[in-house]
Every structure is written in structure tokens, then in C-alpha cells.
Length: 111
Length: 115
Image 1 (tube, rainbow over the protein chains, first blue to last red):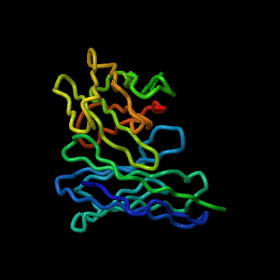
Image 2: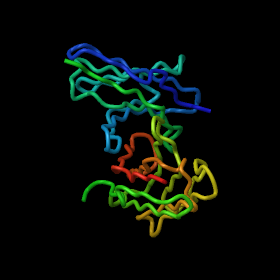
Image 3: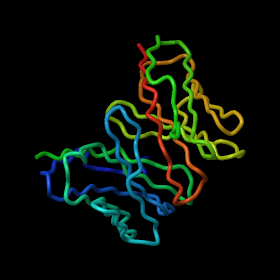
């Protein structure tokens, strides 16, 4: 049972445009959501997070939106840069318990 | 070092052999996690240690897998009688405490290949 789903395995975006990565979850007990970025041969690194009491969190070029009623969150990257090319994992946790990750979306930003 | 350290970084083993993977979490972090990522798959939760509490072993795929954490710091993940489907990158992570807002930090992983 995949509690966190990233239905797009890959996304290709032109440099300077907006990248939108989507994530859906099924467990209504999740109250904290995170995005991690992973380059090949490296461990995932934390990117941005959002608590369930908010619907938006912004950090520079990265913004995460949370729609609790739809059990959906998205990561917006604008403007996209070639260095953003990586695999992005959505993760969720109920009450600070273990993180449950999605299957990842590979983002490629081309010039 | 300041980050999560894992060893070995790469391990090739013959089917049926036992392997041990080691994780040194960030100093002071009470929570430690093991995940694995098989080729083309997402991050699969394996086991979670939090302080002196009993570990959450709900993600271990079979009884060939076990993990321990000695002294609340270093952890060892052991895979007995390895199978080819065990080939994956095994990622260790740690966080300061349990709870929202406590970012978990990953090591670079131990790449296991079973031949």
C-alpha cells in the first residue's frame, strides 16, 4: 500500500521555466510533509517542508503547497536551473514518526 | 565528520553470504533510520531507532534482515544469506529528535550488489 504517491516518474522543463512536482497521500494522519532532492550516487538532501497547519511555505526559488482536503502537495521551482536536475522525493510523517517516501520524480532542466 | 557516515560505500557479495552495513549518525542525534532504494524504486523504510525505545522494525522485508544500535549511536544493519533481490543502496539517516520540524539527514549510502 503506497501511502505517498508521486505519479510522474519524470519531468522535463526548460531552464527559466517553472517546474511543478506533484505528490498525493492517502493517510489523513500525516501532519508534516517534506521534499528531498537526490543526485546520483549521493544521499537525499532536505529541501523544504510544510506543516499541516499551513498551506504554503516558500524558500527562495522553492515553494511547497499543501491541499489537505485533496491530500495533495506540490513543489514549485521557479525559475528552474540546470543544477536542479535531480530526483525529487516527497515524504510525509504522522506526528513525527518515521518518514514515508514517495517513489520519486526525476526532474531534468534543459538549457 | 559532521554528517552521517556509512561504510562500506560499496560491497559486492556472493549470494548466500552475510553482510554488515555500518552507520555513524550525526553526533547528538537520537533518531536513526535505515532505508533502501532498489534500482528504479523509491525509498523503502526498513527500521527506525529512537532513543531507548524499542525499534520500529515494521519495514524489514524478511527475517534475514536485522539491525541494532549500540550505545544509542552507531548502528549495524545485517543481512543474512543474501539474495540477488537484496541488491540496492542502503541509506542511513539521523535526526536530532523525533517530531515535526526535525529534519533527517542522510548518509551517502552503502551500495550492495549480490552476485
